[in-house]
Length: 184
Image (cartoon, rainbow, N blue to C red; front, side):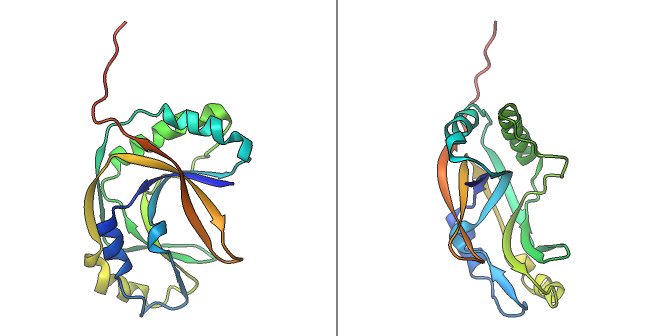
């Protein structure tokens, strides 16, 4: 199973993002609106027998709800493809949640390397980035929202054909509205 921890994107922002025009970008594979999310940690391919211990570890994560703000459009570029995305501009508390999730999973043998955490919402994977600068200039201001993150998910990525995958929620973790301190 390919697993990852993620924050959900609220329905109203999903609706707004799915209304962005598809024309003007060459050779893009758009993310299905039901699959919009912000990855906190990618666990990779995991044996199904480990699911229970992963769920138990994530259930121990204690993080207060926080405000998320995503705004604009941007592009990650690499040799194979370019990724059109909405950057998360309120990253400090998101980085803290990522650290908490990481700390919960490292004792289970996960190694997340040193790759920096860059929270974002993937909109499309483009084979040819031609026209993206103009697209971003024309539509970037349309992609903006803020919301309260009060839960995160353990999600599974499953291939539906040779080129496409869909995501499903395996477990939801509610962030407590108040964290209590214990004294000894």
